[in-house]
Image (cartoon, rainbow, N blue to C red; front, side, top):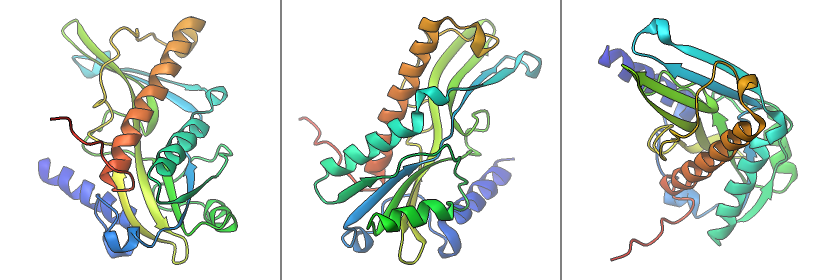
Length: 237
């Protein structure tokens, strides 16, 4: 089983990296130093996933909800663009999301063309992507619960990949999965897991939105650091 997991992960890495066989990690310095204008796009989509994994498969529950009003992709674009601008190395343009859910295998032509029309030479895109290392999480974003014998842990999460594409050649320079895994940024045990999104109060729905946005911001910052597009903060001694 572990061998199958490794093969699946390697296969997805080849799909994401293209024919060049790029693996996750930093943009090579030679390509990074040539970047001048970066377009930022996000296509996580409008769907919130609720997933609860129980002690046995018979206790598993899941639901989906359209939260287009949250404008998650617009928030993601703004956060990534602000982080890149803070690096002080790039001119950054934001591509307004139109509701398109990106396919991690190939970005839409409309997005690539829009980036070039804005004068960008490089596209940084946030794309929903499953991971064989985290099979219970749906690609995109949501609320996840894992329970065992009456004890439960919950987190708001993002499950995505950030890709860096050279627009002249349409070749991917680098990519990185969400830093550390979808629930690496912390737990949200104070958020209950209900049978459907409609059963949450308006206040609880607002809390879920707040936590999803917070977890996405935190993980995106770390993922951009792993790609070497922004500097890691100096460690205090």
